[in-house]
Length: 579
Image (cartoon, rainbow, N blue to C red; front, side, top):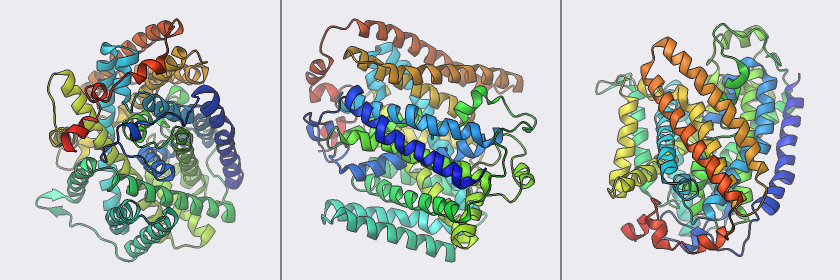
């Protein structure tokens, strides 16, 4: 199979899905209405609730949800062959991820920017909300801890990415000032920002920076982890327009340029895919493709973390409802294109099948390394860029996206900590809640030693937890649609498929953890399984009630005052704390 043909088929499927299916969802299912005031206007506070240009908001949303997962998952899952991964990414993006992300954004905007945790309390019940928060907290803990370890590893292994990684922060700060203070036009800011970012990539390739093997008794990767959490904690407390928005926007443009470079190289070089379409000779110990494929590739097909971003930050910045189609659905499209690029890089970036099998000698191998090395080889053969510069571009892309996901994750974790504190009757300020969020993640990361390996301890549960959260989010969307008398099938079909596959995977993992004597993961698996099943049972009851609902759901929501939102566990509390 030639990689160019695969790229053309995949890109066409995803873009046609955006053109047709997202329009159907926006008009017929979610009935987006620009006459409604969005929370960004109704509750504007200049900190979290900020009306934002849809292209800038798309950049924030896309880069926050993308991270390293749409690279890692597909680059691991191709061990079963490129065809199953390709089908799950393309079909999943169009019919699962796009409607999930758009649905979560719509649900939150129609509820004054409330998070999925708060919405579960309104639509499922207080008990469902408490259990929902358990799943959310564990998922964000996995993301924050693991991504810090992944980024630190890339900074150590690819020292040419150090300057562009940290230099991008200065570029983002300047872009934020240019947009909101100096009022530069967005096209001018975009060109200047992207040029500055790629100039940093070129400088980084010429001037690699590496920490000493140990600093104050700590290994280099541990130092990077600490610095990353310090940065993420500070960034999560700043107003979104200062750093979060501009950083994510410029990174979004940078990723699409990087994808253009990768896909352009495929167009020119047209490398053959050396991996099998369906691998009938998987290495010993590789789990069954069903159901593991559907949790190994989460981001890039459907991901519960996207619902957290949609309802946690993006819904508070949406300028008008119709922008949700571009921000939510097209954000999923961007991630699908990244996942498709990862599949191509990890299967066509090798000279021979033997070389590919050498890398994919066991389940879990390949990952970001296969994307960077394979993609670098394709870019070198296609555009003639030096292998070092090609690898630097792709490594920087992976790092920047993982970092944007991490700082958004810390902000969301802070929201969750405050909401849990509120349930317990304790009001936590922004600073203290951030310290708790960062402290718990650091404790996990360094719990197994100073090398930071603890950050990956509970990562094996990420895929299943993430997909269960997507199913729970879809249940809320379905309930809202049923209460409005609309068809809920676009939500219920993905909900049923993802729910069954994920629960199946959780039961398989239970047996694995038991046989391995991994008691930590076994206990966490049971906690997640019980909490999720309980929420699903509560959600099914809520769906039955929603079918018989005779009121006007939107009219009820209009009666929610800003004060009620502020006491619902949402970060509108910052309006009174900081204004």
